[in-house]
Image 1 (tube, rainbow, N blue to C red):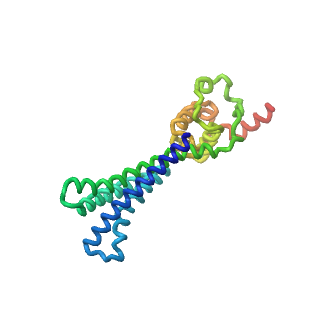
Image 2 (cartoon, rainbow, N blue to C red):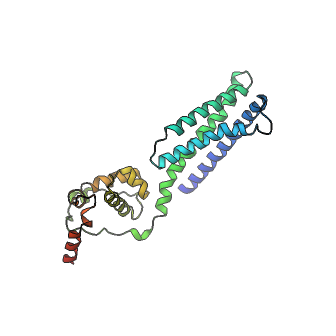
Image 3 (cartoon, rainbow, N blue to C red):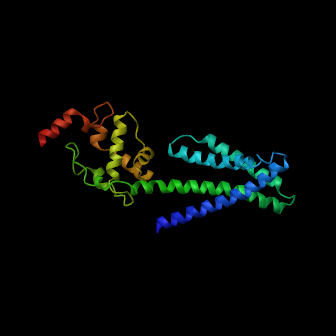
Length: 238
């Protein structure tokens, strides 16, 4: 049911965005013709104005996924949105109601495009979870330095919304970032493994309090389990 709701909602947003773009396009095209732009090139004018809005908002979404700053795309989207509204009003008849009617099309275009961006951001984690391999499931190997009765393992609640094998993926990403000399964050682990940011932050807090990861590191950024002495101890115990 949730998948069908998402698809219907996305289709509705696309339809509304296309309708808003068409209305704004017509007004801007007529304004270009009235401004003596060559008829063969007048169709490019609305594409430049409203097309820049769409591209700028999509760039904001790409920057958000890459954890990069998006000040310039936001400024560009705001500037061309204001320009589109102003040009639509300039083309409208000199009546307040008519001006409001012409202004609604570019406003609707901006809002529906932004709404579509939000839906794309909501959909991504779910799609990644569905694509997660099932063979990753299973209990994690016990570590000789980690007691079975450690409070972090007893008190940590189970995230029912997490996919199968999510905990193992987050732990592997956490250890890989430590080995690379990086500072893991909950948001970074969530993006790398396709889990929710809240779940990534909770596991990060748990991993940083584990003796094997927090107090038994070998000083070069790698967890203690990667140290040769630890591997020897494992072999002797077996």
